[in-house]
Image 1 (spheres, rainbow, N blue to C red):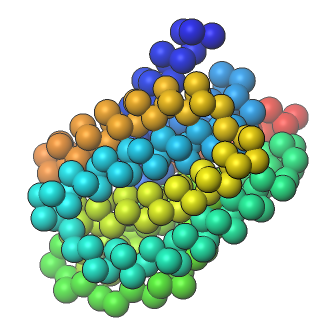
Image 2: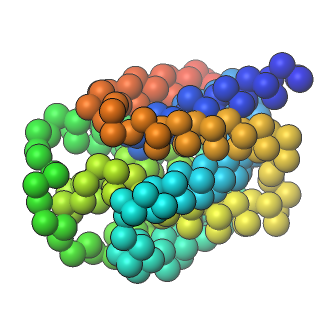
Length: 245
């Protein structure tokens, strides 16, 4: 089991590195934890914990570089908090088998969206930022609290589509992820669904992955991160189906 804990650090690093750049690091960390035998509720709780740490770390780094304006991000936070709370309350009340089946449906939808969005060619950098529709983030926050993988992809697209730069979109995404993960983690922790050893190991890797991603984001933003995430999404769907059968 000791080797598994060290493996979780590596998993947290890879998942958060890719997730910070393209959205959806949970597509890697979530199935990896299931493969290691972590119960689904504990796996979700560990993701919430590690994402809280990594989001705080990466958002602070971007904010320090003055690449993100706090004003639009803070206006969204209350909606994200409401969604994260609702999602966690729903997930914690579901059985493991039912949550696995719901996870497949959500993941198929997220993967389909990922494939569709990756085929759209659009220059976001030249746009003037548009007004965001805040209630949308209740649903994104609820999805994150309930399950998670693909949530950052939805956030990244919403900010890029509104005309924000790539690095600013990362900052805004990490702030909202921090909000929904923090509130949902509190729910999982209060209900005894969090494994501290799993969460801490994953969290250490996540912080390292987030910092590395932010440092290299300007140089590697052109790489096909969404296609990489799609591959992990398909793997997760297949794995969950096999697990249920």
